[in-house]
Length: 478
Ligand SMILES: *[C@@H]1O[C@H](CO)[C@@H](O)[C@H](O)[C@H]1NC(C)=O
Ligand SMILES: *[C@@H]1O[C@H](CO)[C@@H](O)[C@H](O)[C@H]1NC(C)=O
Image (cartoon, rainbow, N blue to C red; front, side, top):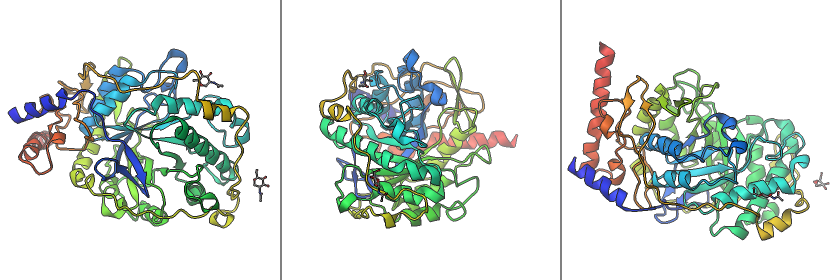
């Protein structure tokens, strides 16, 4: 106990500690200080779905510090190191939420679009939606998030291509948006921020999409329109599946020679339900890690589509669902201390040169002449968005969770708080307490994350979990 509180105090003493920025090297995300390759242990975070983005009322998923504290604390316990947020208002201030997730050791992947008119590409007629006002919106998101150290990267588009038909029209426009975002970042950010695309796992168009965005026009790998990363939303592992049955093996084979990082920007098939999340052990195994950089579980908050890990009630109390505890147990089977300290390979694969023969599917666009900038856009890329809201990390005075949280059995979890990590630490699924009441006072304890792997304190931390599991087993026998 003494050791535990000492470690916590040390963590709390460091104000505005920051995670280390990640950068793309070859096909890996690499920690810029340690040189370790990074595996994404991610969570899709968009409470209320697209309705959670409500600019008329000044609301989006990262606009309320109390809600972010609540969810960051719960995700910290779960072991999450990255959130993906889909729809954000670039005119809002996100400093507190970004700082809370940063303190929890959690990165952010941010989509620059929204479903509202003029705020994303229309895949059927992309030429109508590619105009300066739209690009300005995406650049405003860059301005808003560019200074946060825990910004992992931006998605220029999500599932814009969903079939061969949209694969015929959309690719040059998506690639143009990637180009424009990268030029904007080059002019206005003080580090390289990865820009990529999040694809639908539609096997007719997946390989072509990847090649269309990773290839180098005229063989120039510094070509600004090349994606820095490629991700896919994949639901092919359902229930008690396997590397082969799920088709994950085919994905690994397909992407084996990738020149950019690959990861699941969504996964977590929900039939059967509740889920068993056995894909976790495979995603973070040698079978996949040489090609994939982890993945993002879909999704945090329950919606009618039934993918949630937690029900967020109208009064902002939270009821954790069975899937939360199951996912936590699956993460705990993986040795993340080891996985996250593997040095980056240093290998880089040259991207293929863009040419019509690279594209396999008949009807998929194989023309790499990109649309020119729409009128007015060049001026914004050169001079910056105006007016704009620039984010920055701020001090957070209170990390305590204020809402009532219940575990899947309806027991309240008390004493929950974000435990700020020290400089350069990343949240890791550890041996911290599960969400049962048996160890409720310990539930937010971050000590395992501060302890080196294999140390005495790390071994001690396992005890509450074992106890909780033993109690759980006892109950089920009654
Ligand atoms: C660009 O975005 C900013 C911030 O959202 C907004 O205030 C401004 O009106 C936009 N300008 C144009 C030309 O769309
Ligand atoms: C490729 O696209 C450009 C721009 O839309 C167009 O001018 C050109 O004719 C297209 N090339 C072919 C071979 O279709």
